[in-house]
Amino acid sequence: MIRRRHLLAATASALAAPAIVERANAQSAFDWKQFKGQSIEVNYQLSPRGDLARAHMKEFEELTGMSVGFEQIPEQQQRPKVAMEMATGHPSFDAVNVGMHVQKRLIEKAKWMEDLRPYIADKSLTNPDFDLADFSKPSMAVATGADGKLNVLPLNQDLFILFWNKALFAQKGLKGPPQTLDEMMTMAHQLTDAPKGVYGFVGRGLKNANMTFWDDILLKWDQETVTADGKKLLTDTPAAIEAGTWYQKIMRDCAPPGVIGYNWNECQTTFMQSRAAMWWDGIGFSAPLLDPTKSKVVDSVAFAPDPAGPASAGNVRNCATFIDGIGIPATAKNPKAAWLFVQWATGKEMLGEVLRTGSGTPARLSVYARADIIKGSKFPQEWFDTTGISLKMARSGLPVIVPVTEFRDTVGTGVTNTLAGADVATELKRVTAQFQPVLDKSNET
Image (cartoon, rainbow, N blue to C red; front, top):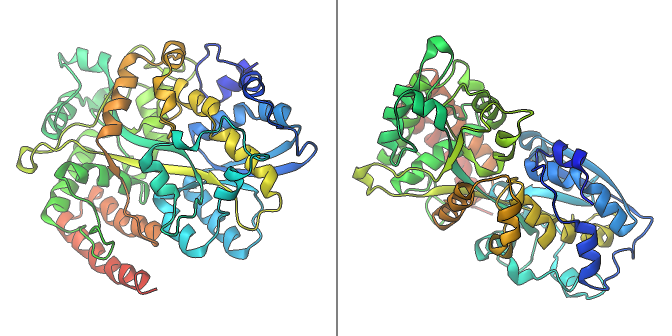
């Protein structure tokens, strides 16, 4: 049975959930113990999905008779670690969680990952209930290379949404959530009460991390950051400058002091302490907000889709999505044993738990149709409605290019500088000129 202490460690729902081990065994006569006694190493980005996998790890070990070494690292440290180890050809992990929104082109170009198609086709290695067709088409498109190689299995399709505090809104006589960027800006100013340590808004200000937030704003102008062919930057267009100006104003006027150094975790803590009325970030960060041992906003938090953009841009409603997956390095020491972990981690039961506990928005379609998940969740119907709306208006939150980390660093530096008072147009033109040659070079090979 799922252990309560594990669920608490994962900030998951305290409600009883189906026993994954028991249901997996009941599904088929598939031999989960064919690699009994073996050990594998698994590497995850720090996230609620990683927390949940860790919380259920004993169940996987009981199911398979294997032992698992499990490592979780913050995203900004995990990406370079994975890249460095993969480049050596001797990774320390047998299965790895990768952000395909960041590393897709690099993984494909460097041929780092095993092709998972032969594993799936091997009936002795794959549970017949696995159901590859259950993954969403957008997530499979990201997981699959131009050559047809299946580099990873989709794990999560994160979505930017708005978290808002009903109690703080009510104190100011405001009805939420805001429906447009203009409404959000007005409300954020009305909700800010700096002498009391309460602010109308909080969002990512830290270099690199802020890039995805700014891009989510830019999508409200119906614009990407790079042309569709991946060759020309669009980071200094009139729309990009308008989006940057909106970002600068709400962060400088309505966010806490020091927000220039905030990543998602500092934003989450600020919102959970009821010190910010609105927070705009990934839906996968929802679970801790409803954990009474950590959050002061359990009874006041509400969830809403992203607001629409300005009327001048057609009141467009888009939200950024970021898809990550899990796969097996081409030079993994125990690839077949690792495949059991990969299919378990992306199976219907585990991804059902991700949805039920609010730890993310899984790429499997079937979990959204399960009444038992909705009924057994701590999250209100509003959260599921927000998910459904956001999935329909999701667009990539980062350009699909090889040097995407450098892109985030370069543009993110410019965005950070605007929080210190730099002119938005000047900064965006500067970073565009700086990064365009890097993009040009990456497209030469």
